[in-house]
Image (tube, rainbow, N blue to C red; front, side):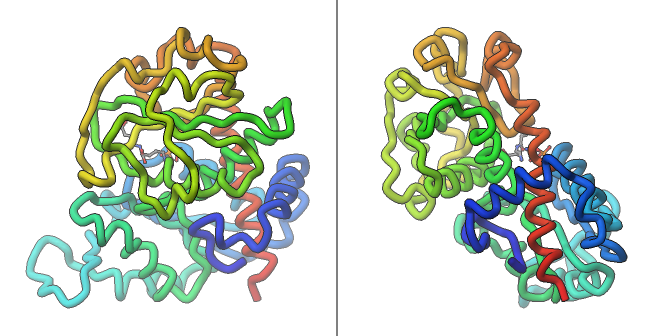
Length: 316
Ligand SMILES: NCCC[C@H](NC(=O)CCC(=O)O)C(=O)O
Ligand SMILES: NC(=O)OP(=O)(O)O
């Protein structure tokens, strides 16, 4: 594997899961792979988990790491081609990317959807420029339309906690005060569709995800019906795709609470974090023994390490 921007970059999903189980059991067994290699992590947006878990994963593999927070530490970077740069951005990605590439062996990039243009976001204009111009492997640390390191950790976590071969996994929209990207739910559906689970997606009208991510997965608009018999509840807010970037509802009847969890098969509660308590999920649910959000976040180190190991093994 050279770049990692979606589940489709993996040569084989089951092999990738096996690698994840291996690195979790034996995190320091592959330090020779990263010796004298450097990873640069570039953040256009905030992060807690991705920054720490990806850096830790790289260090477990013997790599050196550097972090650049573009908005605080670096020059503001222009991403549009053909513009007259007479505004507030002194440097273009077209120079910055190959320069960054010259200092490292792998680049991690976080660049969220900007909600200015659906086309620009869904064409992945920023991360694709890194793939095209950096000359080194690129790992998505959440791009405009996908968050594959998260989805990999989510799949791995379900594998660890499932108590039956084919669990019922429910992705539920939940309310939030702000407009959030579709990257996490897009990526979750696209990834989990590859696993042999029963996957159900539930959200209010107007929150349909882009068809290329949904494939043949059906929406159950009745959240309570969707929860019935579920083994995993995966909550996430996202802004509308069709009314692009709009918040159409903040209806707290969609908050995941104890009453709804009682309809499930004592489901495990999952969320990628950060999470807004008592908007997305009640205190009672996230603080219950069935909440596995901390274990899920801990597995971000595992998914990042599995991905970096696969990339390092192919670096010449
Ligand atoms: N990678 C984890 C989620 C990141 C981002 N959440 C956020 O921006 C939450 C911000 C807030 O709650 O104000 C998202 O939804 O894609
Ligand atoms: N889940 C996740 O990506 O968290 P951060 O935004 O804190 O990195």
